[in-house]
Length: 175
Ligand code: AMP
Image (cartoon, protein in one colour):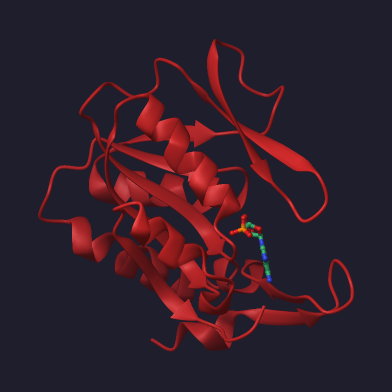
């Protein structure tokens, strides 16, 4: 399936110069969503995945579906102030300022085989924070999985340099 045709591109959102790759149009299409989840799960069907860790918020939709597909649990990597129990916290750089991701300290057991999931990787700051959270819990991070990679921004290669296998269903040039 040509997944790119289901992504809506919005120029200058949220600010001038950004080409926003809107995945909601893929998610809203039943057949495209089913094929996308199937393709994201395919490389991991032969192994036991314990947890799928999805990044707030579009990573929850994809990660929830993937966890059911792979017979794994789901772990939420959330923005600050959302998780009710004790959390690990990782700060990451945005273009202006910083943001944080949190994960419950008891969500992942040491050695758990985990997939990290989000809709899109650009600079890799967000996914890098997710990876740090999983590593603090001593997870065995099997791969990071995305619908969309923007390779020119270097995030996927940065994750690979940290020893993580990175998969995506499509790439767009530029940013
Ligand atoms: P980054 O931390 O730079 O890898 O950015 C990844 C996060 O920002 C993901 O959660 C994306 O949803 C969002 N994002 C960054 N750039 C774009 C873009 N061009 N189009 C859509 N979403 C984006």
